[in-house]
Image 1 (cartoon, rainbow, N blue to C red):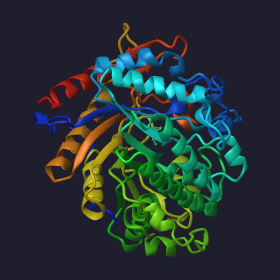
Image 2: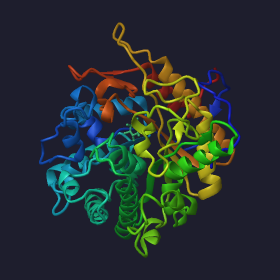
Image 3: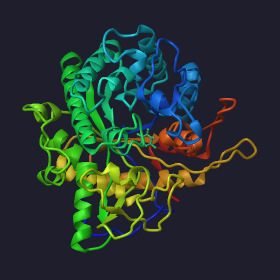
Length: 477
Ligand code: FCB
């Protein structure tokens, strides 16, 4: 369990001294293919599980889809120009698997690869380091039809796809993330069904989690062999998990949720084993027969860095009689074997996602990974917040988002001061986009998107972040 000390419920910090980050700190912003590209049927792209899911009635708020999204596929050079104006040092994007290998197996689609080559060249031309994520949730539909991530073969398909992208872009992309947030792919996709493909079976979720990591390990081995200069990593979404009280039953609930949310991925990838308490908790769900000899050695193939997405903390308690089941990531079906654990809200300030704002949790998370797991360089590959924005006189003054970034950057600096080798930070997100099951109703961007006209308006947070990058740190407040 990560933190038995019940940290105070701290929200946005609003004061602080000037802070300078280490030289060369990689300041970036992140997006993902399905959330911004649009052009869903152009250039040889075929459906992914997210096309199918978003086109299924009742799955995404208001029936929104990624068909057009931010139309980034057509506006890419303008978007890169906006990044350059902000002074971004790096841009983290994802490649849409069904754009570059439409069936999820077989030959590459050159038109799809060409789009990413143009993007990478445009970035390099502006002095922006491309950071490529291979899998941000858009599994080609034919692979889902063949069983999806609960099927072992999907891991091999992923490694082939990784090789194909490395062949095309490995000469110019240095930083590679295999998977984005395998917890979400496995437990939201196959556990609660809140995300594509919308299946709900605890054993499938656990199998999916394993095969995602196996695909990661196989991809790392393939990339390492063909592109020895590449910096390879994975991105996991981590949460400090805190018991609501000192009561042993609450402490045990925190142990269980920490196991499923964090250690399920950290231990295999960084230690080459599943935690014994986790496999015991899951005894009723699966016998782990899907774990073959040698898998964990593949999964723990050496990395060059670890990417961490941080948004919030989980506070949990033992079950109480009559508690109402909650939706989304609090849904019991996301937590196989621990369905009766209760998520507690503390009444601290929340974002528009209802996620509690907890900047100290970022310090805890970074320190934990460094102190308990690895000396590898760490990167915050996502951190950010949704708030309700409005255009007033042509401007978007997103003070809440700006304060969120400020508080979390202060936390990042604190972690560095405590000895964490944190080498970069990517704000989520460069621009407003398709927020998965929430469609366009949640805005995370530093750049406002008018979805009717596709006009872009850099918000106050974008101007503020540009200044952070320029001074390599935060001004005193
Ligand atoms: C993360 C996802 C990202 C975005 C943010 C808000 O879980 O990786 O695509 O949706 O949450």
